[in-house]
Image 1 (cartoon, rainbow, N blue to C red):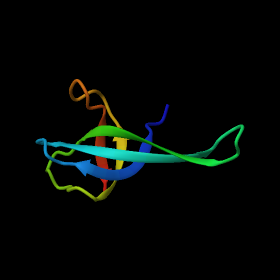
Image 2 (cartoon, one colour):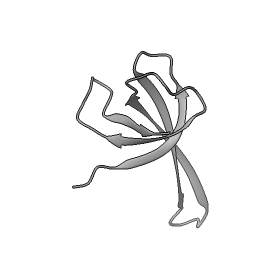
Image 3 (cartoon, one colour):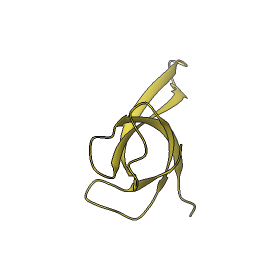
Image 4 (cartoon, one colour):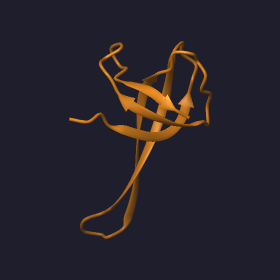
Length: 76
């Protein structure tokens, strides 16, 4: 099974080697037929501490790095 790749915005980079990425998805409500925006936060591994708040990044699934980190930053 291929690894998922998501695109989002860095919302926090205060931790060492970790960034919090907010990923927004849009979909049409099945009954109301209205476009809905939902967002979810993922904690991703950033080895070099290169990304700052506001950066657009792509993250990819990986083996668990810690209790909360299951993603790593792919590219900016």
